[in-house]
Image (tube, rainbow, N blue to C red; front, side):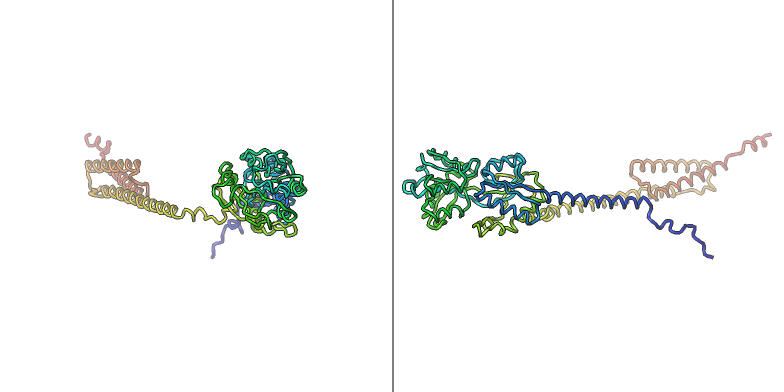
Length: 455
């Protein structure tokens, strides 16, 4: 007859309630974490951004507007406002105040510690244009002494560099008008100004338009073919400026000879608290869709000027962590980069572990040999307890107690291990001591029997 099981159906085969609760709690944590991540990512993409650009008719605003449209079209932000400003100096102030998220600025503009670099956009060269009326008498920068000039709008990067040029060469204009680029060039053509300073990309659509419509001249800072000219000297005095050359015929008939000048980098910057993943995606999109920054209708070719470069050791602004994550996407991982030292370290660790195992095995064998020696000492020359007299039994007991005490001393000092061998040894000694004690008790003379015989 088959023995029936006393276990109730299902008992012992189902998951305990505590395991089910733990599993559900884990599921809730995972789902909650995913929901939080999705919510945060969605909130970053759904909030509007503000991009500080420059004057409405300037290159920065044109580029900023194209960039804002690109960001929106790629779904990186719900809305991007290309904010019209006076230029780089104002843009830096707006960033520091937290009024804008992104900005286009010149690389020589003093920055707040909260500003981070996303990318360098293109080189900008200082164009010093003189009108047709004074072109014959103004051939060098020093000839602008006492003339009517426009150094750029208030707070603009053009004014910032132009003032450095005039101060370096100790030139004091007769009249300085703070005009936006378009108005300044229009008044230059109208003969109301003698010279206009314009810091812009090469070639510049606005400069090209003026060159096509009338006779203008670009002033040069020394001979462009000569090393160590005025442009090189300015780059030494102002390290954030660099020497540049406007090639001959860049604007049709202008210039007739290469023009030596100075320039800066146009940069896209962001506040350091702008989301890292957003800046990463923005940087990636900027280079992947750079052709979207070209506008044939408005003669814009910023995408053609944009090149991916990453040089954190060059000084200037620190890069935004999101931009760094993009630029270092092809960098080898930590394991690959340090493969050789890691391999050596792993080899040393394996060797140390092997040595530890070997030493541990040696200690175990030593302990085993030690307890075996005690066991041999106990069983060697063991008398036949059934025939031993009282003196032999007492001697045997003393020797067993001595061996046991020595074994316990080695156990306490960890020269022995409390393993199965030690248990066998201990049981054997205890058993033999018990036998000796019983034998000794049997050899004692009963007190009553002795008294009766004497009587």
